[in-house]
Image 1 (spheres, rainbow, N blue to C red):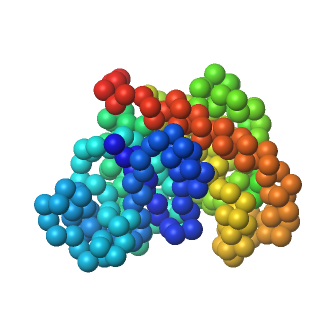
Image 2: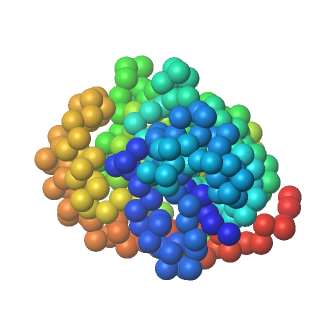
Length: 276
C-alpha cells in the first residue's frame, strides 16, 4: 500500500523523507494539490481504479490526481509545506478545505500522519488547534527563516520518534505563521526562541514538525535566495544565513536523517488494524 504525500508547490518536495522511506521499501504516491483543480478530487480515485476516463491534465501529469475520495490502500499520509497559509482566502486555495477534511479523517482512522511546516499547521487546524501570523513580543509581525536551534520539552525526551535526537539541535526554518494553540490532547515536543510549537504529537501516530528537516543544502539555499518577503520580515540576511547553513549542515543532515529513519522504522510499519 502506498504512503500518500500531499505536495503544494514544485519547490517543496519530500526530499530526504522520500529517500528514507524508499530505502525502507515503502511505496510513495505524490499528489501535487496545487496542480489539481477541485474537479480532480471527484475523478482521482475513479481514475486509479480505471472506472472513468481521467481529465486531460492527469494524463500529462500523474502527480496532479488530487485528493482521494476514500482511504482504500492508503498506508499513511505525509503533508508537506508551501507558501500558502491556512488563513488564506479559500478561493485562492480551493483544495485546502478538502485537504483539511482528509487529514482529520486520516487521524481519526489512526493512520500514520506526518506534517511539515504548512503540513503541521494543516494538521493543527484539522484537529481543532489555532494557526495565525507570527508576532514578536511587541505584537509586531515577524517570521522565522534560516538555521536556528530547536529544543525539546520534557515529554519529548522519551518519545521514540525523537530517539537519538539531542535536546537542542540546529534546524532550518522558513515560515511566517505558527501554531498559536495546540489541538485538544496534543503534546508539544519541541520549541524555538521564536516559535513555541516546533513539533507536536497527538493520538496514536500523528506527528507534526514546523521546521524543514526534509531539506538538503541546495534546497535550503533555494529557499533563502527566493526573495520571499518573509525573509526580510524575519530580519534574515540571505547570504549570511546560507553561510550559517553550510557551517552546521553536516550535523543538520545527520540528525534530520535520524529523524527520518525513526519515522520510517517506528511510525509507518505499525499495522493499520490497531485502533485507539
